[in-house]
Length: 124
Image (cartoon, rainbow, N blue to C red; front, side):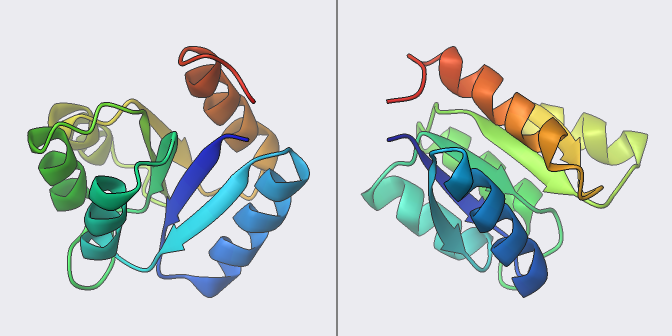
């Protein structure tokens, strides 16, 4: 079973994503901020990381940059409410693989995750 680390400080988003991805066969772990995400990725790397931008302690951009600098190579998908072209560019610049808006259309999110995990050997 492929593992997704969901990094977000919004409990409603966490519960929704866990429900949808759990039904799709993914194991979902969570982190409340970028600092927790980095620690979890370094100790027990997930197959894919979903990362919000704005969080306490360490935001998504900083966390992604740190993960890439520490050698984490699995896909990282920015999951955010921001539609800013500047945020999309910055996400790409720090090493993000994809950018998905929090539109609550979980089909888009599932497609992106499936695509990136199929590239790394598919679902187990």
